[in-house]
Length: 232
Image 1: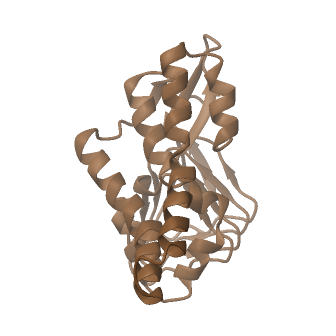
Image 2: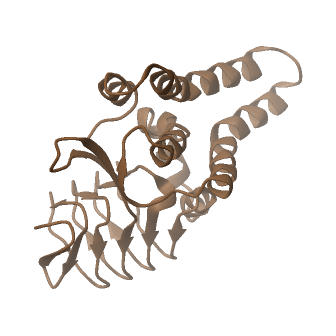
């Protein structure tokens, strides 16, 4: 799995010219966002307070609101998605709206300092988040619209929720595995774990530290239950 420019570079060689340009063009959203924030803060078009508020709006609110509009116009389809097709580019656009927070994770840590604020922000992205959740330090979430978290969930340090995986199929073609990660009420996720596309954690489950959950796995009673449709 990879993010940002390395994905664009790796997949670009497998796409036609116009699709390659589209892939790279979407990737530059983060650069545009940083430039707009810099101009908003640096040009004295208003007092410092208003410039700071506008910069925060561009940073924290514009991306999830844009993602909501995109979901309304072109809903994300889950499953095994061929690279280079419409569904793949919808995901790629959604993903790049979130890249700045992947590159600068401290931006999300700041939100977690205020109880309840991080959950509200995730809901703006389309996530379903319950109450009284403990977010461990260093938690990373990709594809925020594809997480479903119940009440009273506890995340250990540096947990990764990654609802997308790039993998080769039986025909040796690269495809995107995209599916929701679902965590039941009162579950505890061990520190430094990686939960990938389609992972389901049963309510009340307590997973071990450093757990790596393959795509489309369900964990219940301390045991992994593979999905027979996607293999062991």
